[in-house]
Image (cartoon, rainbow over the protein chains, first blue to last red):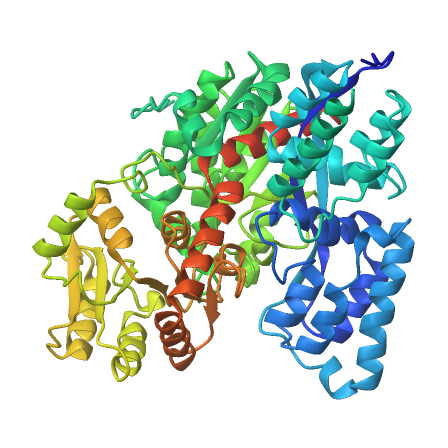
Amino acid sequence: MNVAETPFDFVTASFLTRIGNQSAGTLAELLTGLEHCSDASIFHHTFQTLELHHFLTEGFSNDFAQWTLASANRNDLAEQLAVLDIRDYTSIAALRSDLCRVVGDFCGAYPQFASQSGLERFYFCESVEVTVSLGRSAHTLDEFREGVAHLSHAGFYHHFISSRLRLQLQTNDFSRWLSGSLGLHTLADSVNHIDVYTDTLDSARAKMLRLIDRERRKA
Amino acid sequence: MTEVLTANRIPLENYAEVVGAGEIEELRALAKPLRGRSIEMINSTAVGGGVAEILNRLVPLAEELDLGIRWEVMQGAEEFFDVTKSFHNALHGEPYHRKPKDFEIFLSYNERNRASLRLDAEFVVIHDPQPAALVDARQAGLHHWVWRCHIDLSHPHRAVWDFLEKFVSRYDAAMFSSPEFSRQLSIPQYLFYPAIDPLSEKNCPVDPEFVEQVLHRYHVDPQRPILTQISRFDRLKDPVGVIRAYRIVKRYFDCQLVLAGGSASDDPEGALVLQDVLRAADEDPDIKILELPAWAPLEVNALQRASTIVVQKSLREGFGLTVSEALWKKKPVVASAVGGIPTQIIHKHTGLLAHSVEGTAYHIRFLLSHPEIAAKLGENGHEHVKENFLITQKLKRYLALFLLLDRHQ
C-alpha cells in the first residue's frame, strides 16, 4: 500500500455568514448586486448554499435561482439560473459573468418584469470560514477512508466543496491529495466528478467511500 | 452584580444521538484553542423570554467545553425598563413619544451597571439594546466586544436608533437573526440564528400515549386532520386570520383547528384578542382555543406532534422559533413570509410560505391533498433545523466568532 510523504490533515470548519450592505428587491436590483458584490458573496450564494441546504436534492441549486422563483415569481429565469453548473467554472469572475448575462438578458427581454418588486428582498451575504485542525491525519488510503467517514458535514464540505475556491475551482482537497500524494490519478478524477448538485453531502460521501473501497480491493 | 447560575444541565454527549458524534467532536475541536478563555454574556433578564431560554441552555454546554463563561444580568428599576420597553417598541417601528429624561435614564442605569458588572472578560457579548451602552467601559484595544441584537431593526424609529447606533458602532461586530433585521453599520454584521434545544421538554421525543392523552384532554379528535397554531393571543400572530383560513379549508376537508397559547388572564391586550378569537370561532366545536398554563412545554410538544399541519400566520414576527419547533418534529408548516420565517421555510422545500388568508388556506388544502409532499417537506424541514437552528449549531457559531475575533486581533 502506498504511504504518502505528506499526510492529509483533516480539519473542521465552521462558517459564519457575514451580512453585506447590498440587497435587491427587483430583478434589476439583483443584476446590479451581482455586478458589484464581492467574489465571496457570489461564492456564498452558489457554493456555500450547497452546504447549508445539502439535504435538498430536487430543484434547489443556488440562492439566486431560489429567490427568483420564490420571491420574484419568475420560473423561467429561475430555471436558467438553476442550470448553471458551478463545476463548469474555473473562476468566480466567469461565474459572475454568466449570472449577470442570464439576468441581464432576461431584464432586457422583459423590462416590465425587471422593476417588479419581489415578495421579499434578497440580501447579499458572504461566508467567513474558520478552520481548526482535528488532530487527525492520513498517510495511507485506509487511514484516509477512516478520516473521511468520520468527518462532520461542515468538515466534508470544507475539503470537498469550499476547497474548490482555493484551488481555482479545478479540483478539491481530497482529489488533490489522492493524486499528488498517493498517485491515484483515476480515483482522484472520479472523486472530483461526484455531482455536488444532485447529491446530498451524505450521498456524495457515500459515493466517495465506495470509490475508495473499489480502489482498496484492487490493491 | 448578578451572576446567573443555570439549571437543567444536559451533558454534551447526549446531543451526539441527535446531531452525530462527528458534530460533537467538531465542537470540542473548535473549543480547544479557546479553553480557559473568559467569556461574559450580559442581558437584562434571567427568566422569561427567548434570550434567557437560550442562555440557560448555551452556558452549561460552553462550560462543559472548558470555556470560562459566565452569564450576568444587568440591574434596573421600573423607570429603566419603562424606557427600554418604549425603545424596544420604537425599534420595531412603532410610534415613540420621547419623554425628556428617557435617554438620561437609559444612560444612568448603564453607568451604574458598569460599576457593578465585571466586564473584564476576553470576549464580552452584550444582548439587545438594554445594556448596549455598557461598551463605554471597554478599554481601547483590549478584549473583544460584540453586540447580539435579537430584535428586528429593519424599520426603527430614527431618534432611538440614532441614539443607540453611537454605542453599537463601537463594538467589534454585531449579530442579527436575519439579514432583514440588520442595519447599514461600519462594523461587521453576522447572521446568528436563534436556536431550539432538541432535548428540552418542548422538543424531545414524547410517548405516543401521552400525545393521545393530551388530545383527549382537549377534546381533539385524532382521527381527523388537525391544523395547529401555537402562539400567544396577540394581534400580530393573526389568530383571527387563521380561523378565516380554516373556514376556507373546512369547505373541502373535515378538519379541526387548534389555537393554543399562554393564558391571557394577566395580559389586558391578550384578553381582548382572545375575546375576538372566541367571537370569530363562533362556538364551532372543531375550533379548540386552548389557554395553556404559562409553561406547558410537554403539552405544546404533544400538540405539535399530533398536528397534521402547523400554521404560523403571523403579520409580524421576530424569528418565530415555533416554526423550527414544528419542523424539528417533521411537520409540514404553512407560514407567513415575515420576520425570520423565510429563513426557516425555504418555499416548496422545507414548507410553504403564504402572504394572505386565502394563500394560507390554499397551501393547507394542497398539503392535505398531497400527504406525500407534506411528509417530504417535513423531512426536509427537520434536516434544515438540524443543520441550522439547534443549540449545538448556535454554540458552534459562537466558537467560530470568538476564534475569528482572536485571529484578527
